[in-house]
Every structure is written in structure tokens, then in C-alpha cells.
Length: 120
Image (cartoon, rainbow, N blue to C red; front, side, top):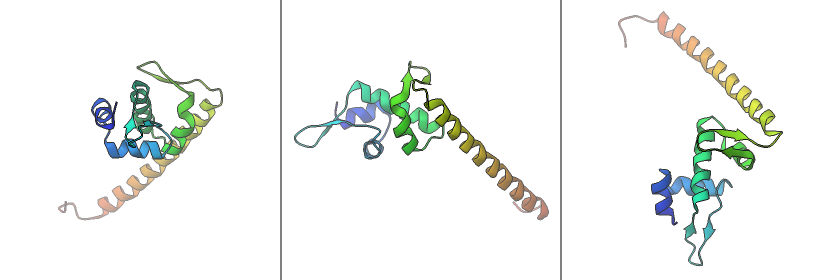
């Protein structure tokens, strides 16, 4: 399928599909004219990429873990032994970021509380 059909089937823009290709997440074949040709497997890959992005992983990490992710249609599961440790490190990174954001929110709440209550 060409890129327009891929956009329709995945809901991902042409620009984002090209970005995924630049990041090594997709590897469509090319016609002699230069047009990209995608397969049904590429549709599944985009679904996995979107799920991993939603889980908070950066594209550089996704490129590393994508070959080790199994997709049964409802759940993504690691199939490489060292992947679980890497995913735990990513979860720890996200947890640390959440803590920093909560601290920032607390500081902002204190600043807001110190101001006049009649200003929005």
C-alpha cells in the first residue's frame, strides 16, 4: 500500500510516518519512482510504536526494543530476556520525572496560595 492508504489505516500523518522511517522504526520498500510501499506488517509496527510512545518511551529506545516486542493484538510483551531490565530503567526514569513535576506543582501551588484570592 502507498502512504495515503497507510495514513488512512493507521491514523498517523504522512509526516509522522516519514519521521518513523528516519528514526529506523519503519522500513518501507521503495518503488523505482521513490514512492514508499507499506505492508500489513508495517501497520502493526505503527500500532506498536504508538503504544510504546504512549507508554513514555523515546523513539531512540523504541528503535532498540521494537524487535523484542510481541503483539498479540491487545497486549505488548517483551520476548528478549534483557528487555525487561531496560523497560524497568525507563519506568524508573518516568517515575523520577513525575516526582520532579509533582515538586514543581507543589511550588507553584505555594506561589498561587500566597497571592490574592480574587485574581484568576
